Image (tube, rainbow over all chains, first blue to last red; front, side, top):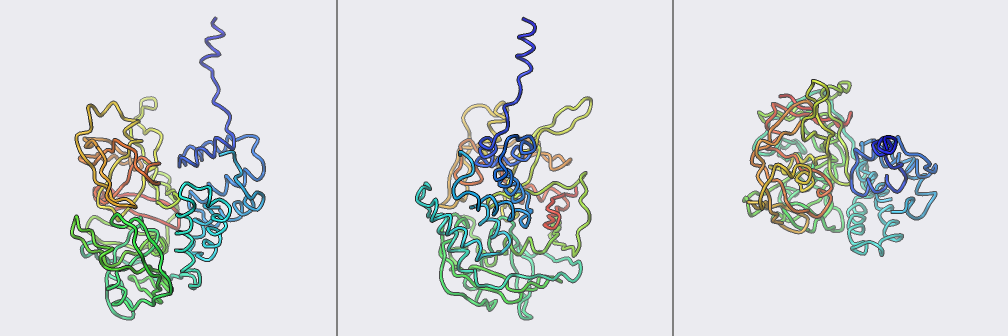
Length: 83
Length: 336
């Protein structure tokens, strides 16, 4: 009983995925996106580049945004993420 | 790809932006809710400027300008004129009369612009070969020129003549707007001070500020909560909060919204039920300001603003002795 309660309180945050990051971007929840990008696991190289480029754009590092975004776009001709 | 296009626009690379909007339209336009109309309009706005040489600027020394009304002095070909500085405007826009007086070189074509005074309007591209603002000299300044009446807001009987938008304002580097009306430009920027400087964020079209909306206790110290993003618009006279703010502070507002806010949007003046702010705290960095009388919107709005918690305009900015926008360091700070 105690163990079950303890487990209930120790719920882990859901994993950060490409889909959840894209959802934050779609909703312009940029501060949360920035916080969660560092915790993202299992992103493909292209997805990682794409999100890094998006972050660079949103923090105003426009020159730094180009390379990763172009690399990501050139990899896929459609959306990189499910949303 | 849309971000790449927006990124190119922010850098004044209009040809690259037009190409990316074009690709975006071909790939996804038909699947978009408006069948790609918005993308094609943005593409056209960029395409008409694509053959302009890149804008350049040289700031020879620090300088301070007086403000007359809403405008600051500018010089073109040795003649004195004046213009507003508007961080909320993506492009610089002139009335036809002003463009004629300034000797603007008009370019071919017309494009549809949105968002000034509440409507869509037609405008012709142009270029100011050399624009002097104090000790800053800008070359190849892209502008859009529209009929005078498109920049007239009947409701407040205000005619705007010249609106220098993000490409010019950001190029000036570090701008300090003081309560006494002066605008000071610094040729160099100091190192970022994390105690006072707030990082600027950039939305797809808007300039954003992370601000705290409630105090939080950390041990025995009063700190601030998680920040929320607000649109910063130095061209807006008033500030307001969106329904996102209302949702997080629902316990502060009771009963049906008693007021009606009137907001200028891309397709006209929108009315929204609203509450009036009363002693609502907002932390600009570590500075606390109280919102009094501003509207807290009770219903969602269309467009990009809807995704943020509010808009910070001149009524709040004027509560500080000065505020500084540093586009080199991408920071915002205030002096109490």
